[in-house]
Length: 583
Image (cartoon, rainbow, N blue to C red; front, side, top):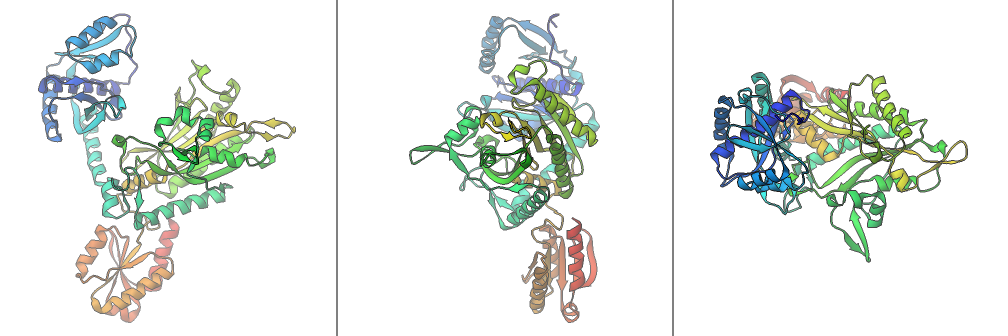
């Protein structure tokens, strides 16, 4: 290694995974001569490499690539480093027939770092493990397409993903989790349980909520509105489009234009679909002059927004083009914004508990202390804001990771990720301070000194988006939802045709009490009806026959728990209501 070269700072497991990407690339180079290599980074739990591979590579080929990787690793090659001048690096790319690397070199100045193991050499800033024999516990997991440099106008490359860990036990546990994740895939369950539909016909990334999913969405939204109204928020409804001049002023057309849909002409003026709700909430604040006595002002909206996501990144409900942000904006004074931040954390934790996420992780994103000039706002307001965010977390006893340099240019933020049943983390809540929009829109309030002051603005989303949160819920519960949330809470199963009328009477009684009940009036045998209720993940089944019809009772079965015995209709209703109330 060159004496003056300092590789990037990576953790041991990140170094391992980065080395795995090179190992995979070397195996592909052996098996598929003429492959052109793009980039191959480490990622969470693993690695990938983007390559232009001659011929078609299918998932069935992954075991062969793995076998070649293991053979190379066993040879125990060392990872050796060298530095080339920019001219030498360009010559290397040309002689090696690596045009993608040559293109990358056009964006790099100065000496170029390279690593070699065995017969394979790659441009790389390092670091790597010392010897390939350390690369043992890995698995190639999938093949995907990826446009070169994320540009749909550029060639589609083959991206091969893998996972890697330091021990076999960690790898086995992760592979077990991946198998469980397949069973919980919200796209499959969404179809099986008739929750939502996504099709090319109605537009990629645009969701059709089916009746079952629509009812569950209503449950989520009703809970969200209830919690916000109880905490002093005021509900808003705002338009889906606005003149482009509004987005110019907010800065979206300057910084976010590639993610906005194409403009539409209305009476000779250009309008755009809204990608965010912020400017509209500012418009509500600016409806008239505000006094410090009116602050904090808490505005919230389940607002539909539209963002142009590339077709290659659309993924079920997790990445869509039209979605509903559970948005809130709080306008407050320097004296009150600490308690508002604390209240944001309080409502976030309440929502996690309500929907069954007891575990979460927190990150605090701060500005880069070495380069403060690129951030809007004074040093005083940044110091106050970052210190206050940290104090609120500390006072609530919440552990967090402080990340320097990850704040937006307009303010620091708190990001919260919930952990699901199988240990995956999902980004949900963002609490973001904003020193930019109050300046752009000249927001003010009259203080106690009768002078104008700039309010502090807090952007806050608890669930991120209703669509994505619903997808997370489906996978978290594997479609087996809590009773209060289930689209059908009880299915009534008549033993035969003779008892359908009594079954319909039971359904009517349950429905009148607010229980979502349905009648299975098919001519199938009872065993089949019970199995179908289990497959459809119905929480309760109520069997009715001659004895039940005579006594005004139902035979109750609970999903997974089985037979609960006979209950009067009144007792069954009371049992369901108690479970619903307990959440």
